[in-house]
Length: 182
Image (cartoon, rainbow, N blue to C red; front, side, top):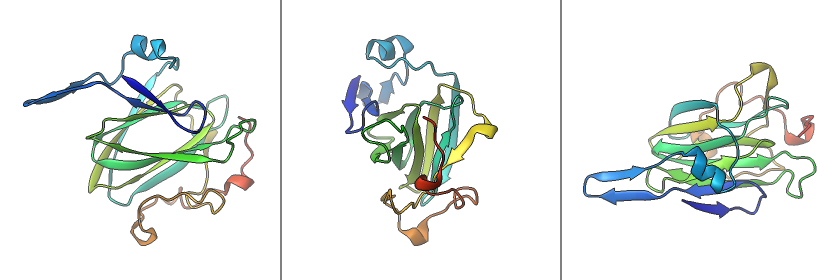
C-alpha cells in the first residue's frame, strides 16, 4: 500500500497493492492494522454504496459536528472525478478543493477526513462508488455546498448540459453563506 499526500493537509490518496495475473486481480481493500500502521487512525463503522450513470454529480455534502464523517471512498466499477473541499476554518487551505480520478483500473482510494465537503461526478457510462464512514449518517446534521459555487470554481469534468443532479443538490448554499464550526 502506498500513501500519496495531496496539497491539502490530511487529504490522502491510497494506492493499494494489487496482485494481478491472467485470472484477474486480488487486493485488500481495507485492513485496520495496516491502515493504522500507515497513520490512518479513523475507525470506520458504516459502509455505503451508490450506483450512478454518466453525468451524475453528487455533492458537495458534509455533516455538521459532532456528527462529521471521515470517508474512505473508492470505485468498484467505472470512473469518477472525486472532489473534497476543505471546510476547516483554521486550516491554511480553507475553501480549497482537490480532485482525483478514481477508477476500477487504478483502484485508488481517497481518504477524506472530518471537516471536508465531498462530491463526485461520473465520467463512465456507469459507476459503483463505495464509502467507508467513521460516523453514522445523521439527517439532522446534513449539510451541503452548491456544486457550482463560483468561488470554488470546481471543474467537474462533465459539460454543464450533461450534468444530472438531485433536487437537493441544486439548492445548497454557497460556501460563503454556510455557517461552519469545524
